[in-house]
Length: 542
Image (cartoon, rainbow, N blue to C red; front, side, top):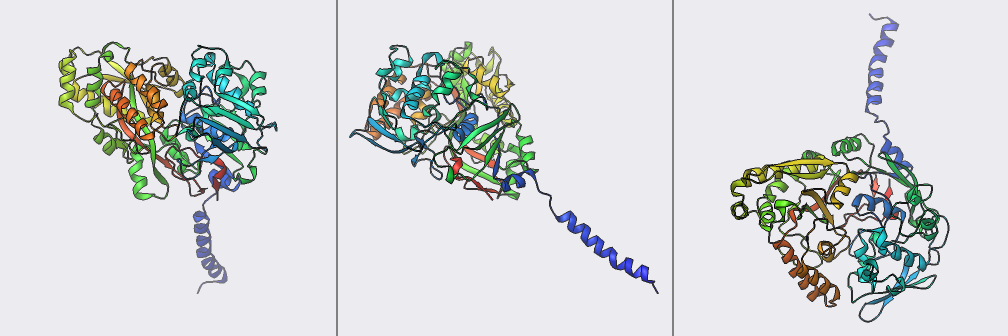
């Protein structure tokens, strides 16, 4: 018979075991859990931003942060990118042919330092981005205004000739070169954002490209958040802006943007509870998430094209037959089915299909026999004598995997050898801008909901062209489209322009995007949006 001690011990052992198991089953709070309680959104943002100046940057990475800090006349709609959400302007009207617009600035619109937002701030901002010395990549976005192109190209130095006027502190008048049916949508882009004139001038001249004004202690914005801290290559932190006109509607207390270039590192951080949102998903992990954790992975429609820019000033790449051969040798179906695996669509044209009724010309398909024929006509039968060149990519496992697949296709179908060179984001952007490449990985996401946002970039001298490609007939058609008020006729003109582009391609198109990312169940109101531009004041955490 057991003694009392033995009975007590035998009774306690299973209890202790149960307590131990219970302790193991209780999951420790993660960083993401704690941040959710404190209403701090943790976002993986891909790369370290080039800068946070809305007039001298051009990337999606930068846009994610700038749109939290600065608001334009029109804001992002929370559920539908095609709808218009009032921003700094609470109302507006236009004349009969929509070539003259008047915007009314809210009485309670303020900068993050408490200064009122004035109509003259927008005039200053537009003069700044159009100043030739600033060399803004997106200056051409404002060419829809009367006189803007002439001022930017130095044909006049009198900014009063440009179609923007501050009638008073709360009234802004914009005169366009012609009817522009997509104008309100265009105003959502950060090239049209205001800047705080006293801050810009405190740290330099109106057209200084490099300035201290974007540092956290100096930054003055007018958006729902203000810049709190920027630790290069670690994190950018924004916090609630108490002076924002709609501050009572803002649900988050702050956002932390993490520049994590390595997708596997980012995915591990998400699994470890360090992030609420990833920028991307490693290609080899997409099938597993779709199968085992469909509640965590999002695959949304996304108006963008993944392509390779071709430097047409370089040796053999000057020959259009070579550029066509490079396109026709790509098995894009195989790339999206076996490599990317995120519901992407093979890009047989440039402008994504379904853009507000625009009929995309589809002229580039997989035809390896025709590709070999063209390469032979160009003097390189079976690739003999073809000089070796590199594909430039920004550091990313996904870009590397896609480049390796394309490298193999060009080797197998055309008999040509290409290398792969990767660079960190800022260096890569500089190499692309200054055309220090032969072929470079590129992507273009629509700036607004109209095909012109994909086609205007290929005009001669455009800041986002960066290929050396130029075609007078193409330029003329884009200019004609900008003067055409009838939307159906305008899109037909654009279709003619894109046909020219596809028959003389300064690129190799690969696929039309989907947006593939991981999202924590903590995040509320993160809706699928075709341009992926989110109005952060509507985002919440539970």
